[in-house]
Image (cartoon, rainbow, N blue to C red; front, side, top):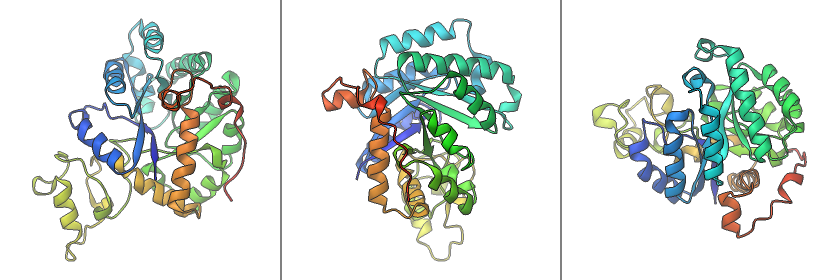
Length: 325
């Protein structure tokens, strides 16, 4: 069983020193690729280096809405030159945010920066990984004005409504799900998942964020995680604690909210989404993996290099809207 982590941040300062072990253990668990998304000019080179070092890492460059105010005057030229020198790269993380943190950033600036990056993705025939918090109406309006997107656009950690899914899908959108989905009511999540075309479903971790809700014994932990107690900050310690029947805090909801999310925890996301869709884990793993490979098969991508072909002619035409039954 192969999995593709369609969106994560393995360059994050909280886990960068652990990246070799995290990638190695996630690969051993069945995760064969990671789309690692930059968030600002400050980490683009780190992401580029990771892409060069690890065959499993697909580098992605973009300015996240939280970092819009920090951009330099030459940010767009720097971004364009990175894509010229890194043909394996996709676009991300970009987007819009009207949440508690996003409200601190001027929204008109967010829109300007987002639109520029979205237009660049379309011009370069690359997929873009999009962040959206409490701004789905604005997002749809912009996607309609810039799109459609034959090379795909990914709505990462999607928590929008079921009703908006067909509108986004018509424009070429893929829908990626992380542990954040578990914050939505099961009924609402199931309705939304059932609305997503089966050829547009992706899975992700958003590591080191979005720790899934699960029993401690089934989770992977980042060794040395500073948010955990000294005596319990290794995976072995935590799993031992979870097997202690007298321990009432045996699930991840009791952990500190800062607890780091290991990329191998995509298995928990797989199990949860598969259950809500009434699918077998293996079936959803294969489906989401093939969807991710299709999305990331743009000219110059590692997916095409692995297959030994530069033919992307079939990619842009393959947007059926089959629904999961």
